[in-house]
Length: 422
Image (cartoon, rainbow, N blue to C red; front, top):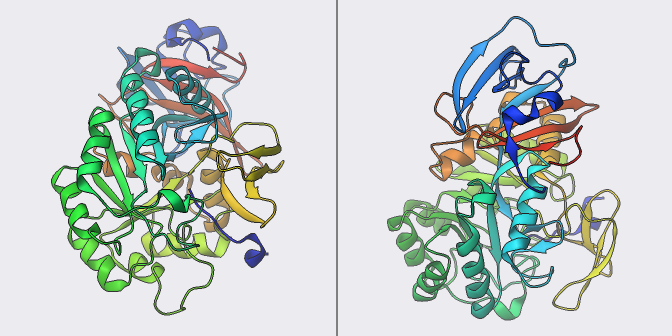
């Protein structure tokens, strides 16, 4: 979760693809209901994708699309590596107690936005609450209703900077020093499914903690920190992989020369994730980050919270603070006029990075598919290729916005815009 000073910047059940023949608007061939046809996102050329047993069986170029399919694109299902909650369900706090049914609800709602794989993210809180919620997530992760949409979990905090600004919206009373034994117990409660930890490298014991994570095959993110260049270098030397939501979780007043941004940008070994919802970063920040890291080292994340997809209004979180969700999707503390998190799904970030950088659709989609799949070793997804999971999203680009038409997860249609619900 992040914080930024605004004033400073001016489903039900799922059914097989074959059963959706009448609803696929030309995206599936009438002669072969297990074939999706659309414009391939990478080159805008018509393509037919055959699906068998939940996997991609063939990918063939075709001359034309069926009637009614003009402007319809197909891409790999989106992968969101930082989801704090969705549709009123919070993985840590703010949405009531976490339940298995809540996880399923959040997953179904995420499918509607084109996200087919996501990493539930638990943020800074008490050991008791983290243990409880990781246990719930661990028990439901492999439920057949989720269709393998959750490969693991992300622990963002509590081993972060306690300093205001760098701490972001994480509650100070739960921030603590890195403790490997505590982490092992949390991971045990999660069924050993924690696949990323975000940590502040300047915290006492953090560098050894990073080394331990690296040896255990856990992705390390640097975030909510104020580490200098030497510390960032040593953290990367020890295996840190990515800068978590770069440019956020950072104090508003920083030294223009000595700050955590430059060393993370300048190290070519470090990927970055960025929130492109239009609120967390200014267009010029996104352009600079993208120019430096490029489409191969950038991951678009949502950092989305439980307020996503809810109607605008005011809410009271577990800390007793009043939050406001604005009609345009901003979550803020109205009293201080600062961001309190994100309520915009990943598809908004895809459209926005195209708008502000001029990057191609191919590159934008790659930053929510190929790159996170490579980061987490998800060899069965992230690309449209024979043998990969048939995780697909069909969409149109209209007036600079991404409109999701259908979502297919593991070969099953889980969302259809025309049918409204599945």
